[in-house]
Length: 295
Image (tube, rainbow, N blue to C red):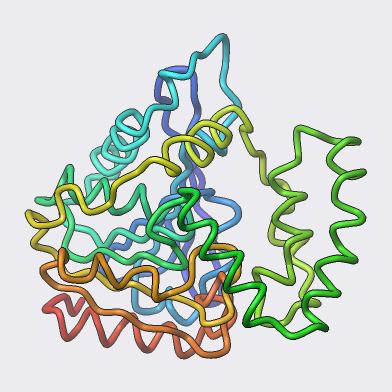
């Protein structure tokens, strides 16, 4: 474990062993604890310093951001195993009640964790997540892209995709990161934004991503168990997000939530916590306070 001083907030970093995986975590800020599922390197770069003055942000790796030691099988990447890792980290850090945050595909992990361990979750935040990665929702994404996007944004994507395939061929182990960077026209309000620095020093375990993001999240049924989830849920979406199904895709699922707040950010795409950080912070903190979770 290491502790670092910062002009604005305190940082504590460490690792936790789970099976063949060393999972990193970074605790940053003070206030009500909020656990962010995903990379402990990537995600701290997307949340503001100001938010760390109000919340204790706990960024935790899952197995998709860890190099395994020894042989592993597909069963080591099962969703139940990933959720158990999150619970292991919560126990290790002695966190009794937490806000749980998941961005993009990690929104499914956050949702399923809250269903599995509701006694430890006070609030659930799902950011830039579609209802699933199914063929039906992928079709909605493509229709939205085709019908709502200006020619300039489409041209930018076409230009970037000319680079994508050669880059993946040259470094297939980095194909997820390369894909994310070259999909900038789909994933950033400013289509010229270069996300490369956000991915610096991030390791991606492609076996895990291929299985969880390509199969598990393709087939996931998020409505299962929602009727029993008695936790306030904030669904934060970007109006210009062309990576996941557009926000109307959530309409059939709204009634299944007991306490759902939807916020669409007008000048954001796939990462509103960075693209409109001040507005996102205000919305998040006011929602927590209104939902009975003031720090």
